[in-house]
Length: 318
Ligand code: CP
Image 1 (cartoon, rainbow, N blue to C red):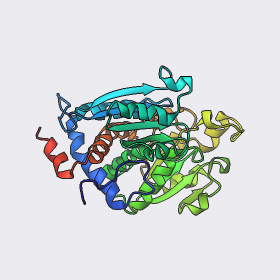
Image 2 (tube, rainbow, N blue to C red):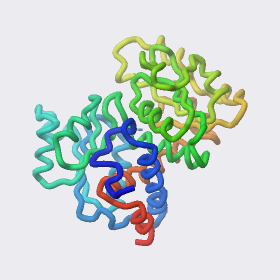
Image 3 (cartoon, rainbow, N blue to C red):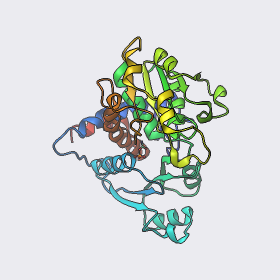
């Protein structure tokens, strides 16, 4: 596969091939080792300037991108809506074009509107990385979930993964569905019908309406946050009721026919979609997901910058 193998931008997993996704995961593996070192820095992206443009709150993604950029020696600037001229009404494109006039190389964007990353990528020359756009996609989260599962199971082929909870509002769910299916996993969703997309039956996934059935079937559960800030209608009777019917609890997992890998993209609503003794329990890989996020983002930055996988391996020796 050529150096520009994943294209100019990373906007989602829907349009990537299994080979491209595998290339990113394989490239992340040697980068993971760099974060284990006392001095966590290689000169791979020295001289590049990357802007992190976050129009929505974020802890994991923003900090993880910043670590990834700094560990590759890129120069980074963080722009948040408050404190920028966006708060005075400047458009997304004008903001980005002004940044480009200062000779930047890449933009990492999180935005509440689905399609915002594509809109920007079509209008600027810099590489654009989607760090989550509305309810559309969150490709680097999908990739770090895939890497975490691949580490656990060796291969994704035939692994049964259920996405549980608020699938309707979840960009993480969409990126997971595309990525998992492309790498050969069996995918299911489980949640109240009001929190599943209308077209769920066309997405090639199994649908469970009871969490007990999902637990019986799955080898891994990726438990999604109830996105209360995106819920304009009464999708569920109450948080307590949701936990009672759909919550992933220790008692429910103890009745499973096998140990189940527990994932959550964060931030978690403890005691709602996931109980604390599950989140912090022996089968939870939630913090491994966070660790893998830095390596996956290093891989994406590196590949978009035109890097070759063998140079990622060589970076270990720098
Ligand atoms: N998983 C995730 O996107 O978390 P943040 O919203 O904290 O970035």
